[in-house]
Image (cartoon, rainbow, N blue to C red; front, side):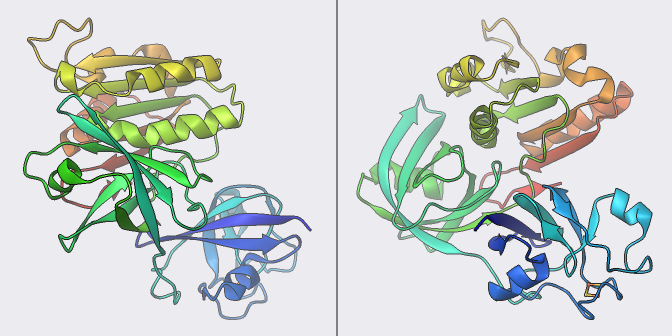
Length: 340
Ligand code: FES
């Protein structure tokens, strides 16, 4: 029997996935998974179970009343989970915390398979998950417990969902907790991960995409590009990858490989260092072709440090650019990412 994978994104950033059987309502599927989504009447009357469907196809049912879900709310993507019957995999934003819904983060173990330094700038960490492949949305992150430190650090998956082999692009920080551990870590070492987390993930692709990556903020885009390639996406995608120094440009071959897999994928690199011989110097905002903004009919995704997020917002404001959507994740070393 057909079933669908439903991602429930809670407002505290936790994501849980539930299996929804054909013809099953989301509220019932979540309840089977011991997740108590907000609800009261379960009859389409009170509106308590209202959530936002961010992607996927579904039947809203016809047994709810207008007071519970108005036409305008329906048109804006709101749904009643006590009535909604998925017809494909769906992503649903739940306006409540995971703890309020009696659920929480998932934890899983993995074994180090590869530690690959890239200059002095970054490390690609590859892990083999000990049990089932973790389910996540391309762009999301996990917390990795740094063995022996009692601390964790947050990293976006650079690999695509559905694999037991997962990878991360980790910025090298001299003296940093993770960087110090990576200096002595070996294949075979074990780590614990918690997640997936975050609301920075690839939404339904309905128009051209502009990806803006700052430094190791490239990681989630590698995951998204792989998802697009697997879906044979024909959509236009332009990636601008900005770094501080020449040595910070890593994984360029991996990006280049997507030009063969995605017919409408283009990218450019930008180096900020004034002393660089790179053909494009400065900031990503100085190398953003007008066509990549498609007169505003574009979905923009940005992952980078806070000043980059602020600079891009200012650039859009100054130039009257109003993209259809702007999703961003600000990251700073040693802190959980901030998404919007
Ligand atoms: Fe009352 Fe869904 S729980 S409308």
